Image (cartoon, rainbow, N blue to C red; front, side, top):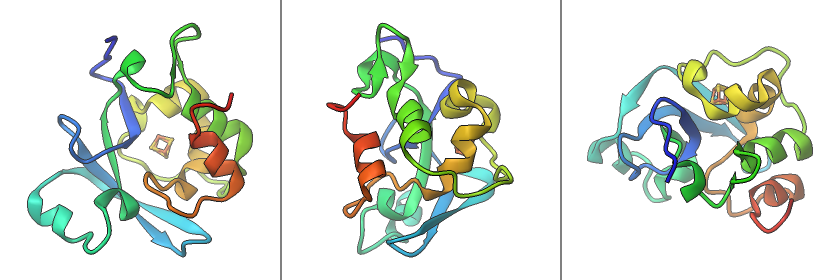
Length: 144
Ligand code: SF4
């Protein structure tokens, strides 16, 4: 495993080690709009309960250390996150101004893709049961 502790995945699950809540998904199922917290918050049972009855990753965004090659989205040869690359390549920009995001300095998507990732990030839902084709393809590890 080639974990890089200082580099955070912005599409983590809440049970990943040291995961923190950094954004809340609003908008509609057809048009998600993420609101970014001023400061990332610790994940607590009380916080996770707020998501009920849905899974926390349907309505919250969590950041946790990127696990590198242990992740199905990570390209070992290129040493890149393909989820970030495909999100930029396949999905539309949804904002012009970059969101105020507390994890930017350490975000893998930002480090790899720059502003193009942030202009698409507000539409990202970690667990999305009704993704549009571009989001579905971006998340599909069998599609390059
Ligand atoms: S892609 Fe940009 S907006 Fe999204 S989590 Fe990373 S730094 Fe924040």
